Length: 151
Image (tube, rainbow, N blue to C red):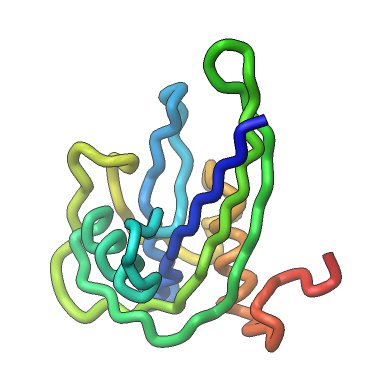
């Protein structure tokens, strides 16, 4: 089985009771909301990754103000020629503050739009699990840096 590791950094940006999200377009064309952010480039610091990715996906300049925590996911999925991949995602989640820029949608990327959503409406959105992880870290600020320290 092919092993894949992806390290990524994301921002939880809350302003005036609203959460900034980007809409991710999956390979099958389905769309779900996610936190702005994405994969680190080789040699890139995760702090710089979240700044770059948030700007690419939303148009905003984002300043990471706190590392909220780290989330780790694993899944198995099919690859070409009947093989499978053992995927491991390591996701660093920062609290982000908007310092400039203007809201705009990404072009030629993995997301197709960005928008602010009222915090109390997020649970009703089609979203990836990372949104709930990020909000849990932002709300709870667990000392261990993970929503469920018992898992």
